[in-house]
Length: 415
Image (cartoon, rainbow, N blue to C red):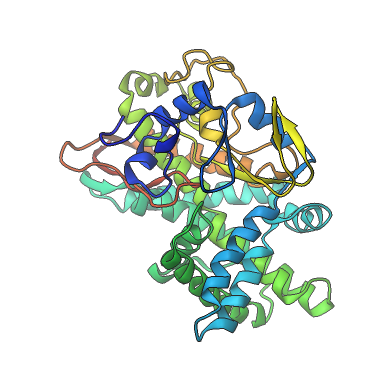
């Protein structure tokens, strides 16, 4: 455990860098002493035991209203500024995200996107990922040091996400990445006032960007979600705010889990060289990825609101109260996984909760896993790499999306 942290529930602090880098001692304490824990001064609940997290994820007694309410608090503070209208429009866009909806609207919005994740589209995205992997590795010198996040993981995930949306890859800029980072901080657990302000401005900027793309003539050679929504807008099948919500959600969130999964996988393997050596057997790549999802989940927590008074275990959760389901803690619950703090790619399969359950199961689950497997295979086949002693990995600021901001490695290409 990092120095300065208390291994008790009071150490749960999403804004603390040491906690985000290694939250597991505090998760263990919560599971052992207060698996359903109400935070003093916050009025919400932390749930860390696997069986309780699973129960809430499957229950129709819980929904998604709380995150929109939390964003409303940020927006209400921002509404006092001269840019009130812009920020209110940004709030409406985020509040309309698919993941923040309950049925039937959630069902309608999810079905709208489902066609872009069918078998034929997944095959196309796989080809895109493979092409970007080849290009990225070819662009590297024979040996040296590189940041696997900025030079490998992010560009690959961006290219795949661009294919989903129908954006030309050449449109990528650092400004677009900065906007997505700001949106991630806005929608994080307990966003600061500054993060809220910056995030709402980023939403406004992305809205302008996508408005221009929606207004462009259709391009048969570049099909994607943008073109589909542009047609739906013209036909009256979707409103402007819903279209913008869908596009910004897919743009800002669509690639982040993949980037985090790739980075977390490489770092975990480098920290467990004996397990990494076993991956000379290609049949173990998929089990290794599944074990990373359990061991170092790219999603730390998801939030639900009690829609009625209901019980979880022996605890009554009142209607309107928020519960934070700590996925990463449930994935290391010794009641479900033997020796849960050990990374073991031969572990017998048990369902981790990293991509959710029920109606809110991540729609891009197969794509994120496929893209990550392709990247892992290319890296292991074409490079040897290790962690430098003078350049520590840096964890990113958001708590909910658990991933690395940078991961420097010393590498040498295989010939």
